[in-house]
Amino acid sequence: MTAEEWQIVWFTAWVSALSTVMILPFGLALAWALARHDWPGKSIVETLVALPLVMPPVATGLILLHLFGRRGALGSFLHDTLHFDVIFTWKAVLLALSVMSLPLLVRSTRVAFEEVNPRLEQIARTLGASQWRVLCTITIPLAARGIVAGMVLAFARALGEFGATIMIAGNIPGKTSTLSLAIYQNVQLGEDANAFRLLGVSVVLAFAAVWFSEFLLRRKRKPQ
Amino acid sequence: MSLLLKNISLPLASFTLEASIEAHGRITAIFGPSGAGKTSLLDLIAGLRKAQSAFIKLGDRVLTDTANKICVPTHQRGIGYVSQDLALFPHLSVRQNLLYGAKINGAARPLFSFEHVTKVLEIESLIPRNVTELSGGEKQRVALARALLASPRLLLLDEPLGSLDAALKAKIIPYLTRIRDEFQVPMLCVTHDRFEALTLADEIVVLVSGKILQSGPVLNVFTRPADAEVARFVGIETLHPGRITSVSDGLAMVSIGNALLTALAPSVATREVFVCIRGEDVILQHEIAAASSVRNRLMARVVSFRTEGALVRVELDAGFPLFAFITRPALAELALREGSTITALIKAPAIHLVPR
Image (cartoon, rainbow over all chains, first blue to last red; front, top):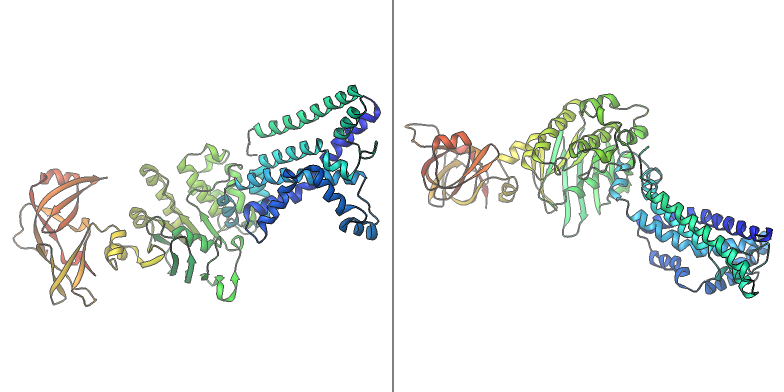
């Protein structure tokens, strides 16, 4: 493995992990709101969150490109007021991975929240716990397995992201190049040995993530 | 501490729960069949449900007043709730379950000490265990202790003995009476079991299809139901239509089937009545006493027997279907067989007449 390849591996792992951590608070809040409450516009939000799952990733990337480009609604605002550019930087990679992996996190954690018996939360409230305390001491601990599973799914999805990333971040070596993009580029250049080396690393990373989640899921839940 | 519920209106799937209750007893039973709205009423008091209209006051504190947009959040109500499924937190140990509410509410000034509650409910040995390792009766006691340790001003019990078999019920009842006597926390107890209501409660509210049919002291409701529907729900064994033929000196002569009974005249001026007679109030004997204070002596034919615990329920044909509860030794002594004849004695005050 060359230094450049190691940089790609570390960058991919790091930005995938960061995107998973970044979407976690929002994903949990959204999943909880979807699982536990009825509110106007809920079905629209549900559909919007699920869209990146069913739309071609390239199409999602194109939407992000138009939104965050310098002439896009959000991009122009960020550029003009905060002097902050997203497109074709590592932040674009983070954005693409976050948007593409959010639906998996939300779907998994929503199911986990729905499986928590609401009566437990209600009784905790009668014992004097505020809604926030109930969430932290009852709901999240009981849904922890589903949340971890959702995080691993989101991380794995981020590791393999290609379409949206190439649309808004390009494939700039040392800046925005991820494992998927590098594999594709090596195949395009006929450098199959390099591609297979990176493929091996991808398999190891994905295997480690899924194994870790299985380990957590199978571990017997023990009261402290 | 009194609980006042006024103008409750809560639309449910098949009816609207409408109730006004004033509970002063140490234990008030909400008594009624399944699906009567009993649990919904408890949820409403605990603040877990929102009513269309409601006024709920505990002691001198208004908890809910929809007219003035007052709704104290559940966690600030100080109302303990032991639900039917007990809802012990499966990811926490028994100790953590017990301390869950105590840590939040009782840290500064707990009403009851951890040691006292665990001792009274005999759960000291369970404290290090996981809740998944507990038996039904143990879970019940841990759930009760957890609710008590949160220092509640009122305890709501939803079918506290509902999921237990007869042997476990007998074990848990003394604990409930101990909570009643030792901790002096007023309780509202949902039940559809006569025995539970009679054993535990001072007052009773009969709730059927979202409507309160009768409320008052338990014995009063069980022995003097307000109407035939209440009589049916409180399990009056003999409930048969009759007609008052005459009233004299406060006594009514009632024609029922082929028999004529003497009963206390009802306060309501009506002729068409339901005759209510509790099985325990019917005495069976072979010889007719020469002179006795009993006003009703009926020749009856034994139709069938059914053993119910220590008692035998005897179905008789006394010109109308009459049910008597006697003990098993009494059954053996009387040598009753299906088809044999016997004299049934019923005192006039034991016959309760309700308007038809």
